[in-house]
Length: 252
Length: 149
Length: 107
Image: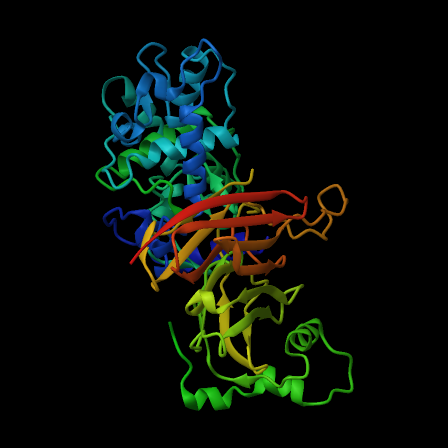
């Protein structure tokens, strides 16, 4: 319980910072981690990307197409796709992030059981598809059918939560750039996910990271793919509009 | 690649060299045993070993390290083995590398775990039987945001 | 899950020093501590990495539990003649992952 005490104490003594520009995740990395993120020969996340390419090409069943069977070469067809997620699925009216869109495709087009959130295959395929948008600017839509999801996500971001009674915005808007123990608080954009996190020794999803945030402020941890995190993901993506996709990023 | 200056080099002859040169009454630590196992009867001399490792690491889970040993890497004069030791790790011997003149240069890299802030010691065994050593201190900082909350 | 990526230039001049950079996917479970249920977690690490060039060993590494998960290993070799560079990672289960790269040497 040492973290909450220090966290609360730190936030008490810090004056509120003025709203500044939202900076990309890589700006908050040490030079060593930034170099690792940019060096594909060392970046462990590339192992997941490589696995994702395998899954992309794999025929799921005799009479069912592989991802490549419909979409062809991902380098062309998937370029920029991840920058537009989460988006509202026209048929169902649901908000889908990249993971859930892949699962939908797998179930409806390939007739296969879902991989399952945070499964190795889904992480790998998501990382592979997101990788095709690396360095492209985020461009989610928040108008029309997306508007209610966006509003809910924005409200979630500013709502005080948990035993520490902290809103996302208190760390990631008001105190971004300041130190919290050995960390520099980032703007909390999700553009690096799925990311290779040193703490995990593995690639994990944005929702896994959000669950750690929720636990950090002693709030409810929502399920993977839950509406609460999906709405928040949309708000985070809009907040990062114009910033480059970094997935698979390296994070601490 | 950061080399060790001559002044500090002499100042650091302590570590590996001193440990082996001084007789000890108490039982050897796992670190000392690993040192002894590598150096054998040779007394390590400080120098010829450059260690490139971040002085401050944000995670002890994976710390990049590159080791460069000064050597012509010829048939008659080359580095045969390199060992990486971390005194405060539960298992101080992290890795041992075996090289031959076919390497062209004695440079190896890997990623290591450091249980806590500590000194990393590298020993290089040469074809003439001599052992050289280098050391670098690494500070491992604590993260505020961990999955355990 | 156990796969590996290798980065190496495919062609080199005779006598040139070529760097071989590898990352292997492995948890490098250091073991010897109790899990949540109180059972001791067994060690499961890549304990050996070996490289041959034209059938002759050019590099070997013994890994302990102090090597990170998904370890990066880089080393060098002098380009002598066109041939295969074979890399082998072996873990505590006895499984060996092999990657073969062709190095074409000119001159």
